Image (cartoon, rainbow, N blue to C red; front, side, top):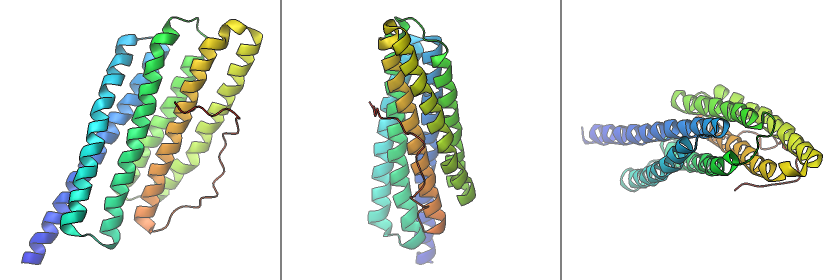
Length: 235
């Protein structure tokens, strides 16, 4: 009976931590969508909402890490249970970084609102962000369902995001060469596009954690990156 009680308490602890992860995931999905929308519509009030929400995301990551550490200290999990707790810590870290990139996107909305539009660049970035948001939703679904196949599909889709970024990068170079007045706006847009591409990388890391959780093995690390640009700007 004592062993059953301990097991039951441990299961409740795991369920609570996983519920926190899903809550955080939902908040980050909202941040991606709203940041991209604020950019396209030049809605500074919405951008401010995204920046403010990032503090709640950061606070939840801290809460998740504290909960996970408490489970490890009190329950001393082993094997699959330990992998689960470690995956929670890593996934929350990736979600926090994605939230930071969404915040960075929202920070530039105010600046871009004062500059001339550059073709449909903001719309293209929104579509790129939608692809990343879809990947994140599926990665979190794969985590809850312990679906390694779906997680591998998410990993493969990151190449599509890289290709969109590459196309945008070339467009921004063209616009800047055609008219120097586009340089400032294109530089801001490039930072945003690069941040969105990095969101995809962090979603991929979440999916890789799911594969490890389910199989006990990390997916093939030889997966090629489709981002071949020479400029790296993550902030």
